Amino acid sequence: MSRKLAAVIGTAAAAALVLGGLFAVALGHSAQPKPTAAAGSTAGSVPPPSTPTTTPTSTPPKTPDHTPGTPIADPTAALVAGNKKVIFFSFDDGPDPVWTPRILQVLKKYGAHATFFQLGKNQALHPGLREQILADGNTIGSHSINHPQLTAIPAAERHHEIFDGPQSKCFRPPYGASNPKVRADIKAAGMAQVLWDVDPRDWARPGTNVIAHNIMTHAHRRNIVLMHDGGGDRAQTVAALDKVLPQLKAQGYTFPAMDC
Image 1 (cartoon, helix red, strand yellow):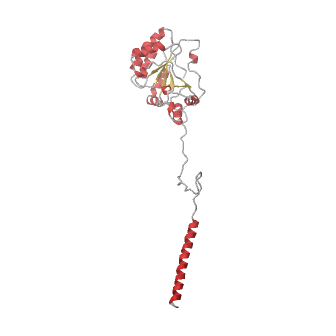
Image 2 (spheres, one colour):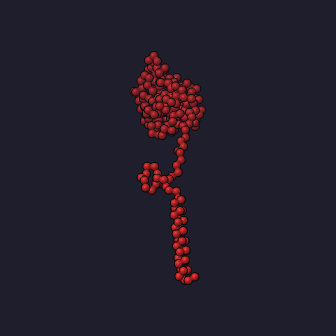
Image 3 (cartoon, one colour):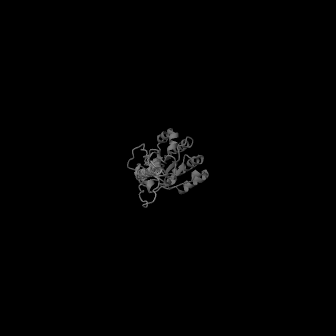
């Protein structure tokens, strides 16, 4: 074989190898899957990287520890029939192992009763006080579990605070903060919303005489008076209660507990 013929054959073989490689690359490229345009993207644009998504899991509201019934419209209605001279005393934020028993002593001293709107967290800490309150002829209302502003928390948390708090037919929203959603939950839990007519500001501890004066000045027939047996030192509350009950009793008032 001449050198010229050998060179031609070598060149042809090299060209065949090159063409074969290019053909293999082309075949491999055409076998790759093509990206699918994301929904809503412009045709021809590069789709965003896909991010694995999981379906969010939501924790269902806790089942109430009591069976909701038909809420009463007004827990004071039957007690004021016949235009009776009654005043309803109520105490929030307890029970407290120091101040609740002292308030109970003053109430018993004058043959008076009251409604105690309790916090679930405090009721759990002092379970025996619930029985003592009821044994003395008083009633218990719910004041939520942790005293949040119900109008400013998520729906699930609001549901928990209302449905899983102290068992009662009456519910007093903390701070008196309410709206249609809060009222709907209270009703669904089988309770009536109970606010107040007179706030003598005993929570601020302005002095025994100031608290007593506020009650004597503003409390009238069928009023609900807001006081506190929890949340701090309530010595002024106890002393003011001991001061106003005999005066109001002398005016012909009686002091029943609400139907809660």
